[in-house]
Length: 177
Image (cartoon, rainbow, N blue to C red; front, side, top):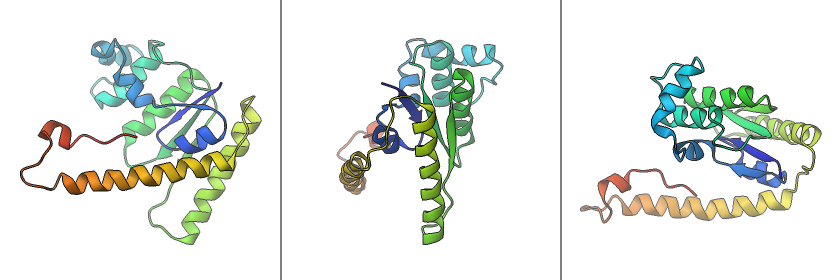
């Protein structure tokens, strides 16, 4: 099965019939993570950046993570993440798309994002053999995501308690689903 990665578009990648790979988490699990800064410097990238991004890129360069078939990159406030995913896309020589999500939730912005998602679907189906968009899969994943988001909000409400029922080092880590 083709593999898709990115910081956005997990549901869309799965709805296109691809496996989703969480690149940053995979990079952090790199058995060579201690050498990641040396690896990215060897490839000509400054080693003083974000450790999460350096570990992810090092996992690509060291061929620890599987090669993605397609990369969806959100244009976000985190420039190192943008560089990491575009760097992986360029390193692997695979197609991808930089998704721009403008601030503000309104009909105009929604239409703009939907148009981009339709471009991604068309691009993937054209360039990656064996992919086909299934809207029912995307709807099911969004329903599960809403449940997870509700649990996430409830968890943070519980963390407001004093004293906090969870250890500090765990209380402020991101909850991943």
